[in-house]
Length: 328
Image (tube, rainbow, N blue to C red; front, side):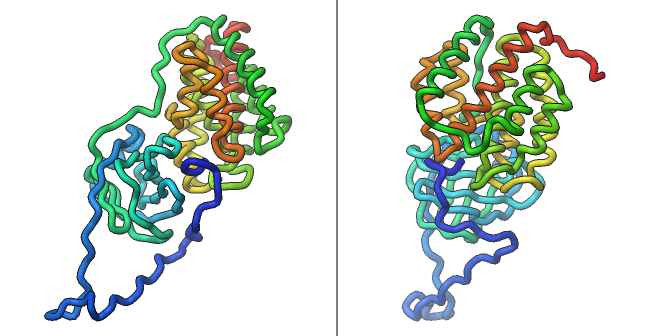
């Protein structure tokens, strides 16, 4: 999903593209004594960062580049092995993705390919320096929940989604149905096979298959823990390991980072609100409606994944498959 809505970015750099050459400074901007351009004053900003970014932000500073620019923010792609590799800079009005730094003020103008850096508690992009002042958690704390509550929530979600008219970006009867069936029956091989086919499937910066997987991973883990469905959490662990390993070579850099976060149970604020609504910590219907409206199909895809994960938790609990069994 993109920042705020799923829309086409201003420009997205092609793999291997070089930063744009900067225009020559005018004679007035050059130093009278050295003839070199004067550096412009940097814009100093503060931000609240997702805890998913803590390893990247607290490590030594390393280079990055502006990957995509949107009206409400920008994506930066870092170099090196530390995950998450894509950092999202957003204003308070944008969707709070699990890899986001929420800024105190709007960013100065950026262009795709601009040089950046991340680390030592600071993000630099173009002429902006962002210092991290506080942290927020993109993973929900749900506590314990009875399966009867989950059953009522699933019925309510099915009704809300059916009345919304919002459709997923993929035919849910194909690989999505195989993934849902594999999880509901506790079949790791079926679930893994479908997950591998879904990664990177569909158009956009965050393909529909990835959004479906993200919603399902978060629901399996958090709702499985809340309901005491050990098998669901076990499935989440295996799926997460596969997705995190394969995503960098199977999908876009932005989507790979979001899948990496989902593998750790970290979601956007709208998805977290739905998970909280399912267990009764807040009103469910408004949360589902907000998530469904996210992007072109991203919200519907995420909602499908959460419903599939919720259905699997209930199915495994009812069948007594909540206990982990050896793989035949």
